[in-house]
Every structure is written in C-alpha cells, then in structure tokens.
Length: 96
Image 1 (cartoon, rainbow, N blue to C red):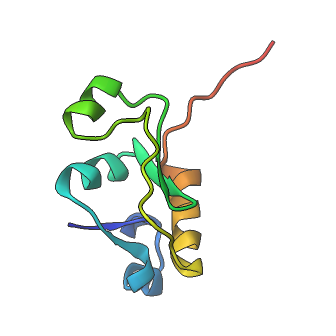
Image 2 (tube, helix red, strand yellow):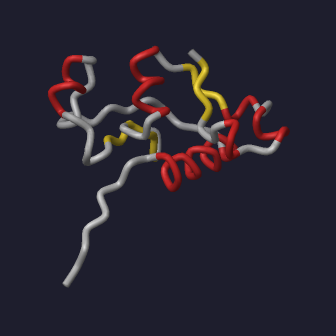
C-alpha cells in the first residue's frame, strides 16, 4: 500500500503526485501511519505515546526495540517532518 506522508487534503497538486511523498507500507503499518500512531525519524520507526503497546505487538511491532528501516532522501525527510508535526500523535503535557 502506498501511503502519503503529507495527505492529499494537506497537499498541493505537485506534492500529491511527488514520488517522495509516498511510502510503500504493509497494510497494518499504513493504517498506523495514516492515523499517527507511528512515524519515521532518522531512519527509524517512532511510536506515539498513545499507541496501545499490546496492539502494536499483535501487529509485529515492538516499541521496546529499535526498528531501523533505512535512510530517506532530503525530499522524503521534508514530507516526513510534516507528518511528525501534523499527523503523528503527541501527548500534550500541561505544566503548572
């Protein structure tokens, strides 16, 4: 399944068609990526704090072990940075 780092609803036409905006992922990884439970940073899978560990383990992903997937080119990194900033689920911690 080809998954978009910058979803169509957030992308200009040229970004929608960019080969660097697409990642070839297994269906379960595509589901998790689209919903912000996983992303990629510095060639590694990163997991959202809100992702259920038992569910990840059932899908063959172990957040306690580093998963290296390889490097991305500069344009892919730009799209992935958008994904981490806008799609990836982060826990917002209140202070004070």
